Each structure stands twice: as C-alpha cells, then as structure tokens.
Length: 484
Image 1 (cartoon, rainbow, N blue to C red):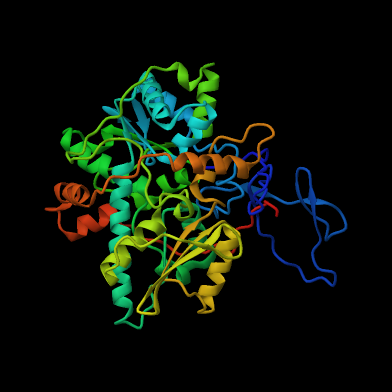
Image 2 (cartoon, one colour):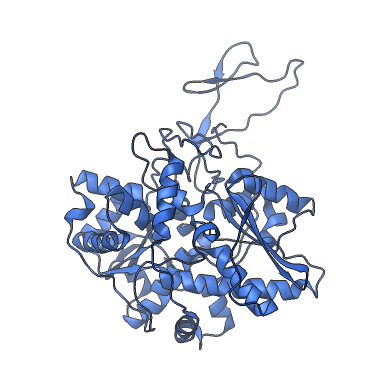
C-alpha cells in the first residue's frame, strides 16, 4: 500500500520537525563498484542520478509503504495529507453511503453499526477552528456525524480511564519488581504515541523495546471495547461494527493498521478508520458547510457504569498538563500513593533543556524516590535514548511524544490561521484544555467496567484486550528523502 505525502506544510516556531519532501521514497540499493573516486550521487528535481560512470544514470526508486515508514515526524506526523486506502475521508464517506467496507484481508463486510469515538485534542482543534466552546463543538460534532449516518457517537474518556489504570498498575509492578531483579525495566516509557513506538521499533530495536509500556493506547483500548464489549451487548458480529476514531495525528492511522491490532478470532481490526481534524475540515469545506451549521446532538453512553458522558481532562492543571492525556501526572500521583502513601502530591514540573523536556520528583524522608519526565519531540527523544544506552537515565517513568508540545500539536490538527504561529495556536489549545471538566474520580466505575467486560475472561484474554507487544524491525535499507 503506497502513500504519497505533501511537502506543503512547514511549522513555524517549532524547530523539531523534519521538513517533508515532495515524495517519500526508499531508493533502491545498487551494488558497490570498486573505484578510486567512490560513487557520486546527484539529487535532481525528479530523482537521484548516479554520476560514477561519467554520465547521469537515473536511479530506480520505489514508493515507501507503511511497513517501511519510520514515522520520523517528517511525513506521517507532519504531512498535510496521507492517502491510505482504508484510512481516508473518501473511504469513510463511501462506507457511510454503502454501509459496506473491505477489511485489510480483502474481505467485504456488511456494516450493521457505525460507531464514532471522539478524542479530546481534535475536539479542541475543531472548536478553535469554528469558534465554538468545547461543549458546543462536541454537540455539533455529534450532529455532524449523525447527519452522515453514524449510529453511535462516543467520547473516549472511559478508554482513557482504562488505559491509565493499566499503565498505573504496570508501572507500580515494574517498580516493585526492579528491586528484586537484575533485569532492568525502568524507566517505563509511555506507549501512547505510535510515532514514537514505530521509531523505537525501527531505529533502536530490541534494546529500547523492553522499556516501553505494554499498555495499549486509549485509541486501541476503545477499539477493544467497541469490537468486543459493545458488539457482545448488541449481539452483533464484531466485523459488522465499523469503528471510526477522531484523532489528532496521522500516526494513529499507522497504529490502527498494525497487524497486532487485527484480531484473528474476530476477523477484524479494533479500529477500522481514523479521521483527523484537518480531514474533517476538508470534508466540511467540500460540503460548503461550517461545523456550527449542524444541529446539536448528544453523545451516546453504552458502558453500564455510573459516569457522565463527555470529553474530559486527565492529569493536573497548568504546569503539570502535557496536552497528551495527563499520562505522567496520573501515573505519578498513583505511584506516590500506592508505593509511598503520599496523597495529593503537588504536580510541579521543572523545565530542563527546553520546555518540551520537563521533570518532576518525589522525596520521602529526605531521599528521592520517584523521578518522572515528559519528553516531547525527536530532539528530546534522541537525548533520552542516548542516556538510556549509556546507562545514565535517572528516570523511573517518561511520557514520550513525537510531537513538540504533545498531542495538542499533532500533525493532523487544524493549521494556524494566517499570521498566527504554531506555538501560539498550541498555547490557545492548552488554555482550552484546562477549561474541560476534570475526569471524574472513576476508580470504582472503571474497575466495575473492567470486571463486567473481562472479569470472567481469564488473565490471558484481559492481557490481550488491554496490552500489546512490539517488534524490532531491521531498517538498514530504509532511507527517507526528508531533510533537516
């Protein structure tokens, strides 16, 4: 499945992105010949040319596929558009029209139920774009998707709760195991960002992977909920549910397409299509519509637990919030309570090299017992990886995101208006994030949902539903034509 990426996008004020090339390609390897001068390669407007023989010989190229992609933030994360056959707005509209889709194995499935799941970061992006308050934007989005033919429109708060709960428990277990084992599993590195995970698999292989949390991202937990729990409740075959997520970056398409998230028993992916704010904006523009033109509609609630539906904010306010779901905040507070009996610890982060690398510590009886960090952007990721490889990392947990400023600055968020910098827009989104109602204290409710869904399934099924595995990939042959 080949993809072509636009080079039109250049983010200002954020110096950690690779500028996308006009085409993302993998040059074909040519056999080396013994010469005294070495090979000479010329980069032309329409490709690469070998000058070693004294005349220009155009080198063959092949288009890069998702399997080749490094998710280096030059293409998938920062691209203006991504044409992935099963992950496009055209495919989404076709499914709405025909109520059929073709899965990744080429099997045509009849659609009985179309389910939309909304994440908070794209909601805020669209709220700013259409000058709406977050709650109003939520109602308008629900109305818009229903006008297209959606049967259920859900928020992803419950999936975020489940993912956070699993990550909290995984960290505490690793922390306790570390004291009794010579095998290093700390720092635990967050796994919610698929761009970072893909980079780790293909650039650092088996060395880094044991440190990465096995907990699924909230998108994939939501996928498991919809295709397993909701399908069972509705007495439908999971493949008959077409599940769409609204997410802030193109890497989420890459994540949804992973073979790890194709259930062989259910014969379907957890998430069938990922749509992004910039694509939704294009869909509205093509209809000559504004989001505010659509009638208000309420979100649906399908989970049999006492929680109020609605997009909500996790983590601490202000300095503690990363814009990526409050991972570091929530794990830090839980670990402080479970491991050291510290309740309501203050979330005060200290900037290090730059605002995208911050840390927070907890001291107990004059001794530092927890040190967490937030590392956003590949510059900081590379520094973190080098410290790990040298055995110099002082951290117990790191929230890692490929995009500077985290998911609020996802590569598929709506672009800044003319005259507005990318950083200024992210600042507006951060302020808006802090106005969202906080997630309800949901420990009991989420455990009830976990029990209703997985309590009788056994530990293996529970692990498969909420955790995943990673794979070291040899990428020596991969060379993207993006440039710094």
